[in-house]
Image (cartoon, rainbow over all chains, first blue to last red; front, side, top):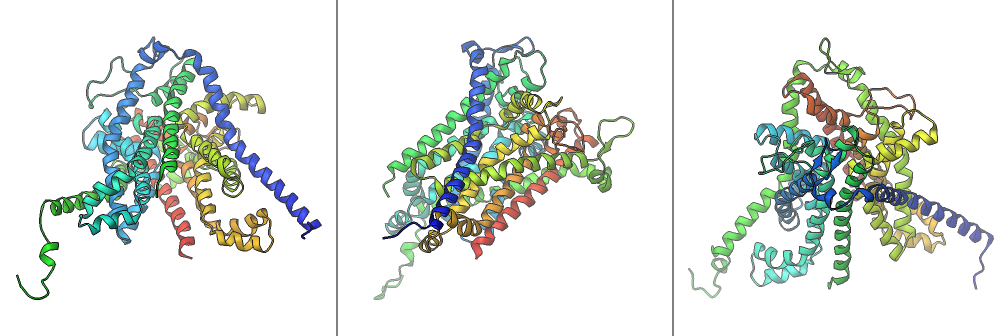
Length: 289
Length: 308
């Protein structure tokens, strides 16, 4: 019935060309990740062994392993989670369940956007000014974790708010109609229905926090320590800072070692990310409403 | 209590039992947590200003800070605090990064939002997300070890740590977030716009070019702005890949030094309360205000389309 005119053909040809261009641009954006991962594995995999993961650095960090740095990163991230997850979830509950559309809510949203946009080195300065000096925590795991926690707060708030708002309003109304208070509704209906979404956000936070360097540099992470931290008032080594130190400050490090550290760091970060993405996909498949 | 034909319902609703108390307590707690973001953003400003202000009042000179390229805070005889070279360094690296990131991230956003379908689309989105997950210090290490050699070999220059290196690294770092926001902006264009255009016989590309892109203009602009904000604030990658030497760059093969990198490199060596220490906090305050302004503008630009 319809016949493609010369104009139709021309338009289709133009469209194909643009489509191809955009595809190439997308691939060029993604290609570097593949290349980088390949190179890191190629150079880094040979140095990774049990002793690399579970030994102290030796001979001015040119030999031995990364154990204290690995453990330090785990300490820093866990303590940061202890601060930021409850606070972030509570803030998200306020925004999603209590807040009205008024100037205060707009101000909070603006603060969250800006908190997410504050440069990491500015967070570090804040950590030094507030936690290290003003609250007298000194350069310690506590100060570094608090700094990391505040930096990660927007991630937790935004992802939690999204999963809370994904719970249909009808669920809440049904609960209220039975005479439950607002808090009972949140605890018994809203949170159980969004807990997996919240968890996804928390895992994502772990992945972000584990790789941060600037905020912990002056607040609690040390270049080198010959022992493990004993309390939250001690300093600690951290993987991210260890990579920076090895690749810029220490002469005579065998070429493969920083690649190995980078590989371990990126393996932690990407596996957390993959976990979070996998979780989200399972959730989407399971959703019944 | 009245025993009228219409018993008042108030007492039943106002029972002050444990559940009521828990509800009130929870409301107060959630509210306190809710305003914590405001408290923190004000706290960041206050604490950085507190450390920087003594310098601002005693030593700071507007003309020197913004007009001089001499940043020599550790000089014994004549310490100078000219941040112009650092500002230009940050701006040139960010500019280079945007040259890399804008076309690729907007192109990728258009492909993912308008052309890709189903599984391809999901896969591409996941890959872009993974790109965003690579930590800044790993990017810096890549700049230092891989890109450095590559640039020296390809362009036959003596130093590979320069504006080009840091710019490409920073562009790759900023691209995922720009792609995500731009894609959201494209998704936000109502489908009825597309349907109306397609009903008139437009091809998909014509729809994108004439309808979707103009309608998403503000969202795309704010994606670019947020990318710029990222570029200004990025620390470790720029510190490691830019060469970190004070310079007004004349070509993309010159080494530069960024505001963020200066703070990161020097804060560890300064005495608390010294002029140098105060100057670094003043740099931080300047960075805070700039990124604040950029984020605010991006938010207003997006809000602009919502209002319409």
